[in-house]
Length: 399
Image (cartoon, rainbow, N blue to C red; front, side, top):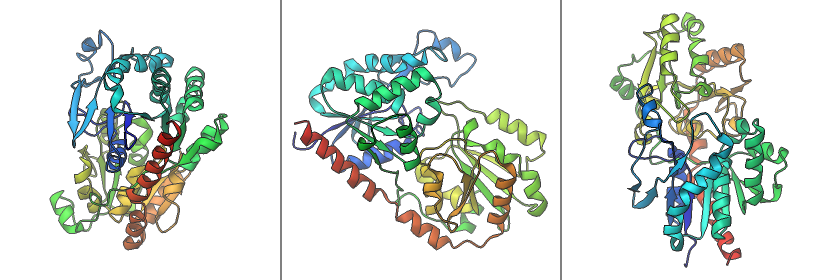
């Protein structure tokens, strides 16, 4: 092979039935594909009786087809044995075992495995790399923080990191977290996510608001993310009654939908009903990334009261549309929102601090051009050049 060919290994990847799952990973690796060829393996959890569970949870573990072609790239979805809520410390082994037949079939088409998330994906990938005798890289994306609280999964995560040829981290804070768990500092390199400037740019606010039926003079907050507890939509909703005292026409846009972590929309709807906020909170559902600039352009301030992040790409996407970002001091958030000109980072679970930051943000005249300029400095080009350099070096060392 003249160039290394990557086998991208990640269970969180878009498919026809889950088009918004892991789009940030696809964006990153499909751009790498412009420099070197890739194949994608996205293992899908399965167990014999999961069809029965769909009678109670219709969207539980949707099963994609075994194979798709996305933008000319082959994407495989092999199944692996996984019992919901049980034996999670064995998911990595079963993921590797379930994926092995597909990798053996493709063996002559790749020479590096590139895994995303240290566990279970990274652990599975290091097993496969050992069985096939090829190098493997792992990208840390933020789930390593909560998973490290479980002893059995932390142990396997550290085994994976020890066996990886190279580790990428989307933020320095995540790198420091893993180093504290006794990982090898010399093979960890920070490579943050980038911004797709062809998809994220500001539209005319008046036109965007007209399309979404939002008053021109309203103050508008927006959050984007999967409808799961850790994203903190409920923390923002709880502050709206106080915000409405100063901004009575305030509108809060929530963009997001179901995800592998779950879906708390019914809980959020109940909270909105109890607080009598139906006229002020709008659930817009999930938007494809190329359409997300519409609701972002209609807003004044982006907020995400999140409990855990690695590198939140959505912050750059909001900034590329001219929005300041208010968020919590977790993960790599301070590394993205790193200046008062871009927004404010407040302590997690400090409702008063979050309320104060939102009050100030809604009242402030932000210099949108500076926010947009910062986002544009974080394009994918610089990120991809680092990644391709690393993959090329790894291929040369491995022969």
